[in-house]
Length: 112
Length: 112
Image (spheres, rainbow over the protein chains, first blue to last red):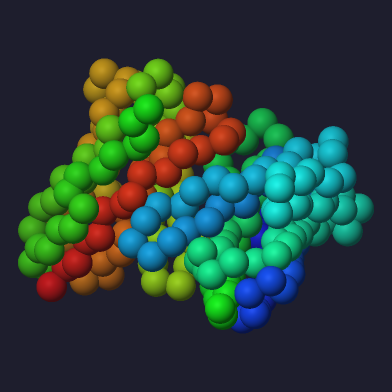
């Protein structure tokens, strides 16, 4: 089955800096890669996703890049704000499957 | 509009007891998922419904766990003879397509 590795487990940045979270996957058949933000005491919320026919997608301060050859994808947050502090999860979904595999999460801390 | 709701938000029970956790998906979403999330981990897949039927229950850890969705909307996760190791956050998600998933806030289960 699919295996998703996520790094780093903790990321601490100053407000205004950029943050990058990286994930690798094992199943070359995976073709959908969502990113979720989970705040304390809440469920994960989808913030951005990318499909395997696209190399990069951007939504305001958030961008995701995908390298199919290397089987890795990354989340980029620019101009970080304290409200970006949360746990971020990547996931991979193989084509023809509806069962995503999640990474273990990255705790992002943005210091004011 | 209304998102995914889960009740109760917190449940404390004693080892050996039976518990039911409820999920109300977004109206019209045919796909419904149950996940379990332990501290410091990503969501772990339990079961996936498409309509009223369980399309994939391969994530259920053992036969103490069971879930139903009799009318294709509300779902109930049932845990018999609870054990301390069942303590976790149980997340429900719904999807119109089976790909992009919308999570509820979760039920925090504590087995004493």
